[in-house]
Length: 538
Ligand code: SF4
Ligand code: SF4
Image (cartoon, rainbow, N blue to C red; front, side, top):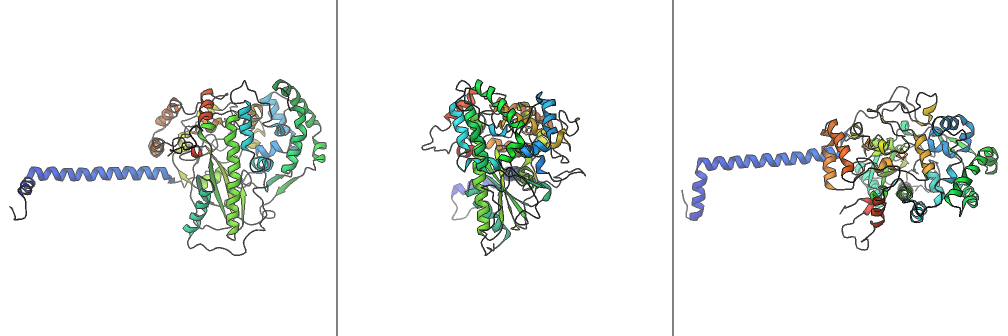
């Protein structure tokens, strides 16, 4: 059939379309195209959903005897406190006997000497260049108070409990969403790469809170008074002098405590904390990929110090922002409660074998800080599952890279510490037991830090989830929950083959070299290479 307005060509097309075979062909093509589109959209949706993670209603899995963690049992609190060393000499004695073969072992006298060993220009990762970098990383926000905060001390310079600047008028948000969007926007502005908001949960708060009443100035004074003993000495001289000084300090500890007017405070949430928190905002700051790849060294210690510096300024700024809105808020680094547990509660990641929060896109290459506030967000983020802890059951890369054998190598998660010496009464005092997870031996970890004079971080650098921000890593993240255990094992084995991870007891020279070249081209940096440690991120 033709009409006046149709061209002969159109007539041909019509004729062809009228053919039953042609009609079938176009129909099939349309059906096939729609199916392909639907499959593509479905795959995109599934990928997107798996990147978002699925709500995890089974977390946490707790034993009947689970209790909130007494901060006096945290490794850093014990290591930092001469008072606790005197109260619990059996802890030092047991570790010295079982692990160090050193009857005089005492963590408390090692803290003031941490990261004071002389640089060694013949040792890659420990040269003057590396030492200057790591020391500078802690420097900007008042070195000593920052160190106190890193040791888990509450109410320090950047995390003051003082609430005298709370604005008298309370800002009213139009909706719950507007409130959480505002907090997350401020967090992003101040350098967070992730921000989750959890309902305050007393199970994850330290109870009681423990404070070693040493100010930053006192700690600095102590370190300064010790410095002339080793300053300008060679490594050999340092290694001869310092252990002798430490033995004298152990003998004179009660006197030293008096001289320093050293007190301890056991603080209660009800009586001492300035308000009743309703919410905990969890913030993640990034660590640099190329720098952390230099672990364990003074070089890689710089991204740790830098992380703490950012944690301090970020959490302090968010707390101040909330107080400016008329609500109470206290910033928190390692103090007040478990940042990892709150990070899971806030839907930011899962707990790995290395006991760190593994965040999609970063793995453990973040540092966490928090803000406790009485602002009630009403709607909170939920724990989520990406199949990460499940992946850890087939992967032991962090444990293989740990120079102190501190990491749990069990095949499955469990409620209590089961590592070496777990049969010795009281050995697991530093573990938060009763939570189903992998349990690290923090005593071995911290001792390696003191011995190596570094923050180590091998277990974060070697993690299979610690990868640069490339699209194909997100793709693998998206398909991870659907992969069986055997594939997880293969993925973990393949990871070092692509040049990732593989940390050992000494830093890799090619990774050191790569880091010290990573600033090349920074004047223009057209692809934003290395911005926030995300290599290749445009
Ligand atoms: S920081 Fe180092 S010593 Fe500590 S658990 Fe990790 S790898 Fe082991
Ligand atoms: S290295 Fe493997 S086992 Fe360890 S935390 Fe990372 S993914 Fe888990």
